[in-house]
Each structure stands twice: as structure tokens, then as C-alpha cells.
Length: 262
Image (tube, rainbow, N blue to C red):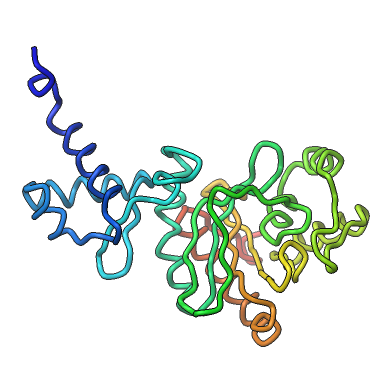
């Protein structure tokens, strides 16, 4: 039996589509995919929708598709809840980016307590904040990390702080462990955290928790900018990040309990 006759048609189409997007220097439209691969339009659309839902492909404004950065050159293939989280977060992140004009990140917590960058929507401004998705950031000095630590089991958060090498990354980095614990507790109470030039010189950001349908914090939504712009719209960034984190949580099935219901 030759290789071609042994191929499963649907599996071959998925691989051909992924290979096409991997080669493409720019996002592709549905029409371009159909023209290139000669698939029926309905089949191409359904394949793309499945790959978007699984997190292998991102759908951008203008109905353009590109291979997810984590698949192209990041930590590797994704699937399951993490991919679904990214797919659900993408439109919310794009709206937040366009509302603030700043870069937006989605971050999760690694098993060791550090921040794992899951997705980003980069600001269109010439001077902007950015970071590679294959980076692993310390949690003690980052807005996302502080949010995620504030909603982790206290013993595990304490173990992380005891294990992590606390260093002064910039002149503004808080390195006193007691003060770091106070900042983390404030993030839990306030519903957001700030990192103002602590992790990156001249870089500032705000993060808020993202909850799943069980109410568990599964990620943090973050808006990051150059510090001179953060000073100009600090409260607006806080308000918008919280608002869009709540929107993402609702899309994931979380229903906040009102004071009347409690």
C-alpha cells in the first residue's frame, strides 16, 4: 500500500492547512486558503473553525487566519482547556487592545508558580510594550504573577516565594518578602495588581483575574505599556482590564454572585 492510499483524507487536509499557514508570511483569508488548497469552501471554513477552537490557529480582524505563535515557534503544540481558553480570550483581548491602544497579554501559572505567557495582542503604536510568548516571567514582580499568586493555595504561594530567587531587576523592584506578601494580598482584595517598572525598566502594566465556570482563577489578563503612558491613564487601564477580565470570565461560564444572592 503506497503512502497516498494510506492517508486519511480529513487528517491530510488538516496537516496541509497547518503547513500552508506555517509557510505564509502574513495572515490568510478563507478565499486564499481555498484557492491555494482547492478545498470546498465549506470544508475549509469548518477546518479553520476547528483549529481556531483548539487554539492552533488564531482568527484576526478582517476574517484572517494565522498559525498561533506558540505552534510556530513557541513552547509547542497545544490542546484541551488551554487552547479553548486562548481561543475564547482572543476577541476580548483584541477589543481591550483597541480600547486602550496598548499591548494585551493572557498569562497562566506554571506548576512552579512562575507566569507562562499564553497569548498576546500587540499594540499598534510605534512605541509599545512587547514580550516573546516563550518567556517565563517571575511572579513576585509582575502584575499577572501577583494576581495568580493571590488566588493560589496559600501554602503553594508561600513555597513559590521561598523557592524563587528574589532579585532587584530594576531600581523599582520590590524585594522585601514581607512587602511582596502584602502586595499579593492587596491584589486578592482589590481584584487587580500593578507592576510599575518593577519587572522591566520603563514598562508598566495592570492585570486582573480570569475565572472559569467553577469560579477558579485560570489565568490573568494584562494590559502593558511604556511607563510614560501608564502615568497618563493609570485608572482607565485598571478599570478596562477589570472590565474585560470579567467579560472573559463570563464567556468561560463564570457567573458572579451578586450581593442580593449571597
